Structure formats: structure tokens, C-alpha cells
Amino acid sequence: MAPHRLLSVISQILQTIGIALILTLILLIAPAIAQKEIPASVVLDGREIFQISPSGEYTATERAELVNSLLQEAVQEDQPVQIEIEQRNGLPTIRLNDRHLMTVTDRDAPLGRTPEEQARELTRRLRDAVQQAQQQRTAEFLRWAGTIAVGVVAIATLLHWGLGEFWQRSLRPSLAAILPQPNADEDETIEHPQALNLLVNLLLAIARTGVWLGATLYITNLFPLTRQWGYRIFNSLIASFTSPIITLGQSSYSVTDLLVLAFMLLGLIVFTKMATDLLKSRILQMTGVNRGAQEAVAVIIRYAMLFIGSLVVLQIWGLDISSLAILVSALGVGIGFGLQDIAKNFGSGLVLVFERPIQVGDFIEVGEFQGNVERIGARSTLIRTLDQISIIVPNSRFLEQEVINWSHDNPVSRIHLPVGVAYGSDIEAVRSALLESARNHPKILSTPQPQVFFKEFGDSSLNFELLVWTAEPSKQVVIKSDLYFRMEALLRQNQVDIPFPQRDLHLQVDHLPLKLSPKMEQMVQQWLERSQL
Image (cartoon, rainbow, N blue to C red; front, side):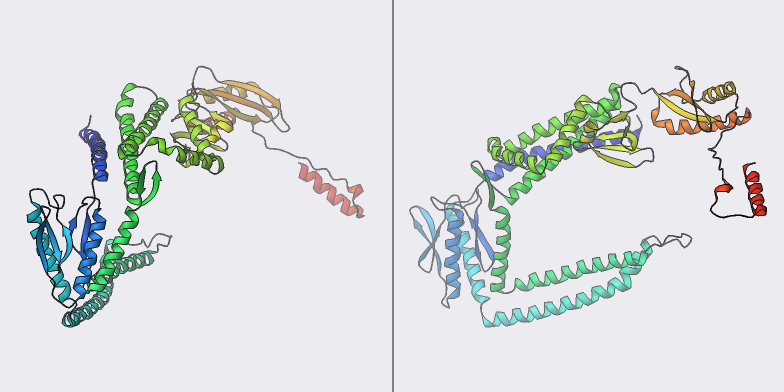
């Protein structure tokens, strides 16, 4: 095996193993993440201070909302804020202006830290956050932030203008030098300037949008009120992706869960495709079976892997398969009304794979199309015509209409080549010439032998037919062309004419509606006689 081919095989194997490991890792980690209790954030003026966990009958969200509301009330007041720690029921309790703020439990403390140590750390963070929030509400800070905001807008405006100048003076000439130039000798018109303008304008729009987006985010983060609204909008977007939107059985699933599940199923599809491609190209080829059998085995294995893998993914992710009964029922109704064609083509694809009336590599004729079967998919079959054009044919068409399979079971087939010769020709010479044209042709089989049949006495010719056998029916167009070239040369050597249709025209001048003079009638009669010679 060549070194580059060996490297290709090793690369395919490593890619397949890598995807399998990633899928396994996701399947092992995802349930643990889904079952883990998610803490809630304590936020002041749109800035996260710390996170707390559930405690007793209170959820993390309920505890965080209570702390957030008390902190917001405290910073709105002009009086100083007092934050202290006291012990209650053996646990440290943080008090805000002599009001209970929160009790620090073992679940709030990270690994290796006691609740008392965690309470002191949280108290320090709360004091710093409250002091900063009160300071940012002063008139002096608001004037400073306003000045900074004006400066940021000015800088963004300058960058907006500068990017346009840079794009026009530096980037456009650089791209024009990199892109291929149109050939002046070619007749086709290449719209090079339009494509370059579109590319430059698109890149410029993306850069300017990034500048203004960054400026907006920076200005929003300067003021407490705008920072709060930005944090709320961001949380609303996150909640829209994490809130349950569908319930199956006892479990609820959000958009994020569905996206992760879709990603896992997509990874399963990619993995099965790579595995079956590796099976076809590296294992089944060594067995010596034909291409159609290899494709059938690969398709069956891929469908089996997809079905079993989908069940495993859904079960490990926590989805009860029995809860899909309603979904399957709705899918059945959908198939009955709108997806029946897809279901019919999918079922036809399974019939084609198992019954194998056509196989990959067969030369077939369906309707007006002739070509080799390149792929039999779940819904359609790909046919590559002799002109190297890909035709996508629905699978159901192969079961509902007549299909000519030149390669089915035995690829040996007979080709008919009709030919007509002029009346009066030596028919034995015609027979010898036709048989001689088929002799020693590399695509024509010597057994069965070529035959010549005298078909009929035609209107203008004696009609014969040469019948030859070939094991390569996909080459019949080339074979017919070669044989007709040979026929014409041999028939010309034997002085045998190939006629064209002839028609005699007889005019009765006595029945013309106009009365001609005797001299005119004589001229017409002479012209007709000369035209018949």
C-alpha cells in the first residue's frame, strides 16, 4: 500500500474514533449536567456578586431574588449601609441594616471552605458592591460617565470614517491584486468589479457594525440603570433558551436541550456515515463481492446503527421512549396527509436495498434516462448518465414503472443495428459486409456469434438488421457508432448503395383550372420530363 494511501486510511480511522469518543463523552457528561442543581446569581446593578444554592424548602432562585430586592432597596437610600455577620442556629447569617439578608449553609460554601469563611468572603463582596453602587449614583460619577460616553461615540464615529478610508485605499487594492484578473482574450464577460465591490462592502459593514456594537455595550455598562436593563435583556434571552417548551412524560425540555439533542443526533449521523464509508472502502472491497452487494450491506448496517444509536442517545439523555407514543401518532397522521410521498419513497428504498432489482453500478434505463446507478439513498437514487449528468430519481418510480436493467444478473445483452440497402443490391455481399463489420471488435462477444436478419422489403430499401452481443451495455452508443462506421466503409467497397426515401410527383395538366396555350403546355411537359430524369 502506498504511503499516502496508508496515511489516508489512518486519518479516516482516527476521525471515526475521535467522533465516537466525543459522542461517548457527551453521553456520559450530559446526564450529570442535567441532574446537577443550578445555583442562582446575586446581582446588583447588572453585575453578578456571587452565586447561592438552594437551602431547605427555598430554591436558589427564590433566595437570590430576596437578596437582590433587599440590596436594591439599600443602595437607593442615602444613609450608609451596614453589613454584619451573626450566628443563628449554628450557621453564620448575613444581616443588612439589621435585616436578615441570607444564611450561609454548607451548600453555599465551595469545597474546602467552611460556612464561616464563606460568610466573611460574601460580606466583603457585598460591601464592595454596595459601596460601588452608591458611588455610581452620585452626580459627579454621572457627569464623568457622560463625558466618557461622548468620547466613546466620538471615537466610534472616527473609526467608522477611518474604516471606510482604509477599505477604499488599502483593502480594495489588496483584494484586487489577490483575486484573479479577467482574461482579455475570453469572450465571456467577468463581472469582477461588481464582485469585488460586494465583498468590500460586506466586510466594511461587518467591521462598522462591530465598532458600534462594542461602543454601545461599553456605554451601557457605564450607567447602573442601563446596565440593569442590559442584564435583564440578556437573562431574558437565556431564559427563552433554557425554559421548558415541551413536556414528554415526566420530563420537560428547553430549546437548549433540544439543540444539544439535535447536535448529538447529527454527530451520530456523521459517525455512522464515516463508519460505513470506511467499511465499504477498506473492508468490503477485500471480500471480492460486487459493488452492488457492498452498497447493500453498507446501507443495512448504517440504518441499523442509526436506529440503535438513536434509541441509546434518547435513553441516556433521559427521554422515556414510551413517552414518544403521542409524537409517533402525530407523525403517523402527518405521514397520512402530507408526508406520504416521503414515506413511500423511503419504503421503496428499503425494498430496493433488500430485493435488489437494481444495484449500485448497474446500467439502467428508466423513462428517457440511461445511466449507471451511483447511489441508492433513503429517498432517492442517483443515476449518472453517459453525459456525466446526475439524475435524482425518487425510489418509488423504480417500483411503479418499467425499468430496463441491462446489468441485472447477467450483463451480457444484445444490440440491434438496423440498416437499409438499395433495391438490386447483392444481399449476400450485404450479409458478408455486416458480419465483417462486427468481426474482431473488442467490445463484441464472439459467442454468441453476430447474426444478420433480412427484416423486410421496405418502401425504398431492403431492410436488414445486425445483432451483436456485448458484456458492456453501457458502451452501446460507442459500439453502435463504431459498427456503423465499419458498415458504411464495407458497403461502399462492395458498391452497395444506402438509399434515401424517393417520391414521384405526377401532374395532370389537363385538369389544371387555367387554360394554357399549346406552346406553354409543351414547355411544362418538357420541364416535368427533365425533372424526372
